[in-house]
Image (cartoon, rainbow, N blue to C red):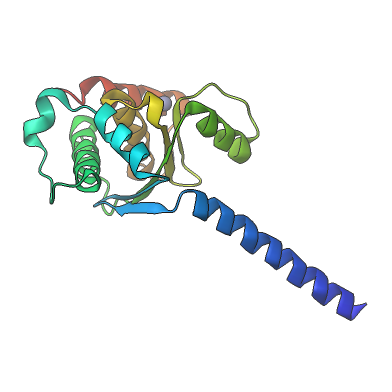
Length: 180
Ligand SMILES: [Zn+2]
């Protein structure tokens, strides 16, 4: 009986390893940006994400540390985080979170279902419990990026999370004023 229990535990941990390996292997590429780790699955995906995250007249204010697509994406996200903090007038110290980029909203909705067991039609979302923003490449733009980062800043600023409606209003405010 004891032997059986031990082998069951080993089997279970092997399964967990395989599962976490397959999740990581699928989205193995990472960028360490100033405020977050950005995970994505291919260079083409990142190139498209960078292209669609068009900064308009804010472009000249973004300082990249290099000239690769990775540097450019990191610089844009850094800028958006700082701009959203300024717009909301909320500067949480040591803000740190993750971004995961998926190809389409289908994967974003599947991950939402995995976390919350609720079906939604979201194109992007922030999960406070995972401290992670999920974006889809085919829906990314500056406003969507700023909206979710608005949620991140609000969540990190308040000791007690504000009510959902207030959270949403503040994220919408960040989205609207990120281009000011
Ligand atoms: Zn929202």
